[in-house]
Image 1 (cartoon, rainbow, N blue to C red):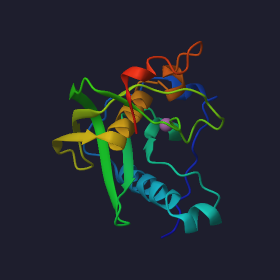
Image 2 (image 1 turned 180 degrees about the horizontal axis):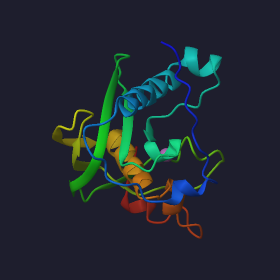
Image 3 (image 1 turned 45 degrees about the vertical axis):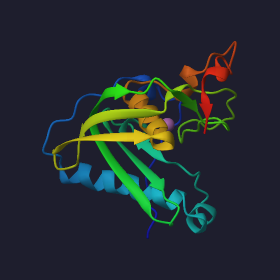
Length: 183
Ligand code: NI
């Protein structure tokens, strides 16, 4: 696989703090190509051979706004235990329901647009049910859990101009940790 050339914006860019707009179908060929490139990029970033050779930070999700485009599109690529990858294209997502149970990433969340160490945890729902559209404009409903649910919530936040660091209480970065499960 070739690592696609994509330019991921840093959090200092104001666009990352803006709300993205609903997408109209059909998508252009350019959009379809970009979405495929984003997934290929994430897959490469999770394969050691590529991440070392090209100095890529491993990422699980990427939103359009991180490439400077204010459209409600994101992708998530999740490595499975058997070495294969689950890929999700999520367009115009709506969260239909979520678990009361809250979880957090013990080592802290990361973001390809946040290039610094950040202390603290981000409360996320352990399971969510989402309605969205695929690249061809077909509506679907999906239930996701654990790390994939966290990735979805992190990316949906991007579409609303919210970064994970915005969800950490600066005065008490581990607030409420006792009421959540670590993953
Ligand atoms: Ni991010």
